[in-house]
Image (cartoon, rainbow, N blue to C red; front, side, top):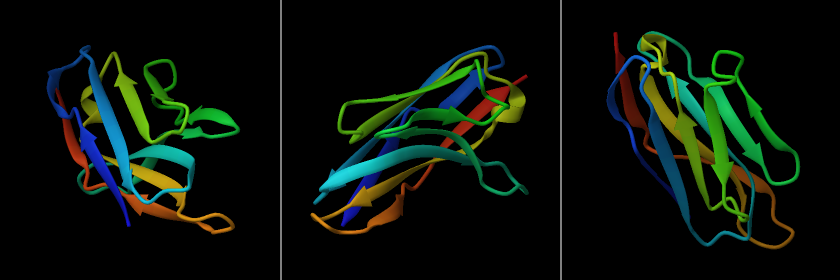
Length: 121
């Protein structure tokens, strides 16, 4: 129904930058929010940043001032600009959308496959 395609992961040295993208496709009536999560080995998945259609953005404390989430007006495509990367940012980054598929429908969550971000020291 909804597919999320992530891109932009890779290997970067500490202090460097990466830009992740997430594009939603499928039969979508509206997107309420797009979020980036990450999961490091042995750790739980955590919210990194979110952009909401009506309420702006929010960030995890650990990335405030370094990461910026942005998107187009429909939120069908969002970006995560990651600057001043640290080794502790190493994780698989997942995109999640809260999407409504039809008028008067309920929002449901859909996840991407994830993209690896590795920050070397």
